[in-house]
Length: 386
Image (cartoon, rainbow, N blue to C red):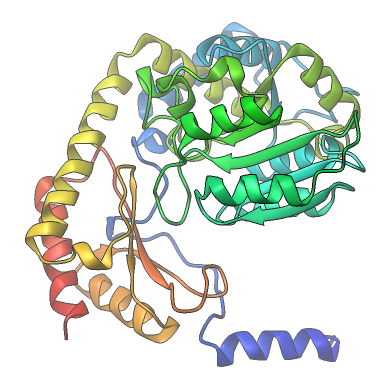
């Protein structure tokens, strides 16, 4: 059946703008594009431990059978949430099916009519989508610009006694790879009686003791209202959790629609989450991978400098390094040239990023070799300067 004309026009515009998306196959090239920073997504050790846990708990089923509030809750959920809360030094944790579900559920349910939400202009689309479903007023602030936050607080003060102000950021930004100034932001929230919410998706497994994240590395967990951790990046599995007080958990169980009205995770997903967190907690093999990742990040930065590429890259100390190459056509061309040399690096196109800020997004991993880092940046320097 033919698409409605408005939908067809939108698709044609994407093709004309050179921003049309297609589902890719599994790449066999050297990985500088996936979020599997520690290689845990393909860890046989994690897979075996998850299987052993399912056997031990006699939970070798294929599905949850329903939402958690009906038939989908099982003892692995309690084990996982207790372990996650303990590992991240939080009162409570609530597991969601994905990072997108967690952000949709949290931000559509928590801010209320009359409240104010101020969010960094570079936060993830899932946060924006959740905020758009909330009845609260919401405004973005310039990236990492705390003076702009203060200006917005003064401009939009409702003077209502029960109005809450929520300030939202990522600890590590998914497209730029830079970090939020969390200490300054926490102090600002304390001084202005605001609730700080931090998405730790790309900091988990990379920063902090045993990869517990940037919030704990900075010892800020006691003064942050809510944290969101997703498991599909460095942890190599699936799902997410919102961390905060027990009252916040109770509230989300009662009002977060993406939690209430969805089938729970299957037992093997929960077993994998548990297996990964137990590995983080023990700091055995995973600790070595985190150390290798940090070494590779530093080597990548040295090689960008030696190849004269610093001016093209956004400053970052995370696993994400973005090389700004304006224009969808040009950034796609250079990605294709790198692929011909054996390296998979994904071009990030507008409208995902602003026009003129198109980029190659390099993801660094513990399993990348020094030689691979050196080669991909040597080729990039040749192609980008042609």
